[in-house]
Structures are given as structure tokens and as C-alpha cells.
Length: 193
Image (cartoon, rainbow, N blue to C red; front, top):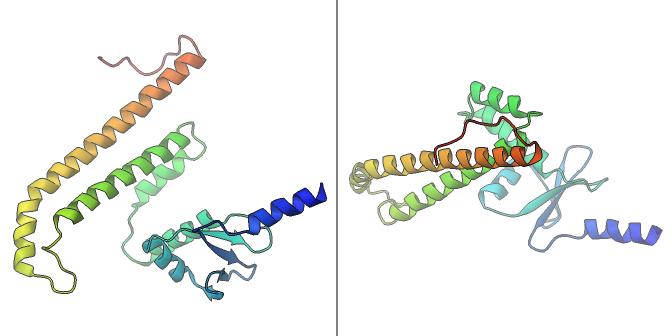
């Protein structure tokens, strides 16, 4: 029995292949096991921007602290520059905690962010050759943006429509689940189908 516990603990300590392990010590310092050096939140932010896979573990308990560290980075970004979230939006998000729709809202936001990232990738792909970070051709960029403005409006319209459709689909799934759990559930008004 004791051996099984030791093996399980050893398995947790072992680094996952392709995932960089950071250790957080009680003195609040972060230690990068790959480079054998202490790092800062700014370094972790750079890892996120570079798309690196990593996990942050408590040095004593081996608890996964990745979300906590990412939230710290978001807090620093929100207080240090131009915030992404308005006070109103943050209040709305807080209201969803403990609400029956909490899980649904998390999924909804995640899918919306992915759709936005996909849209941004398509735009970046279309703008290749016009925008060169090392030598921006201002005239070409201006012409490109003038042509792209209607396309960007179309992309945003499509994005908003996809977002609305995702929400309607999740709403319909919830209604079906509620009806299966509670026959005669007075769910949402029936949709014209």
C-alpha cells in the first residue's frame, strides 16, 4: 500500500512529455525545471505568448497551480495597461459563479474566443505579403485595409452569428436535458422549427 502511494507520487513528479514543469515555492518564487533557474511572471507570460505547454506545481504538495498563475498574469495585465474587460463585464462574469449556468458560460466563452482566434488567423493569412513587421509598406497597408474593411465587417458579422447560434444550440441542449430529467418542464418557449 505504501509502495503504491510512493509510485503514484513519483508519477506526479515525473514531467509529462512535451510539457514544461515550473515549481512554485512558499517564498512565491517560480523555478523552471527545464532551465534550472528562477523565473518571473513576465517569463511565464512570454511562455504563454510563445505557445509553450507548461504546468505550474506547488513545490511541496505537487498541486497544480497553473490556473492561479495565469489568473495572476491576467490581473497584472488588467491593472497595468489598457484593460480588456470592462467593470460591467467583470461584474457579469462574477454573477455566473455559483449560478446553474456557470459551466455553460465557461464553454460559451471558450468557444467564442476560439472562433475569434480562428477569424484572426484567417485575417493574418490574407494579409501576408502586405504587412512586413520589419519593413511596413504604409501605402500598401492603407490600400489593403481599405479593401479589407468590408471583409472585416463580414467576418465580424459571421463571428457574431456563430456566437448567437452556439448560444441557441446550448440553450436547446439544456432544455432537452431538463425535459428528460423533469417531464413537463416549463423550459424555454418553443422555437419555430
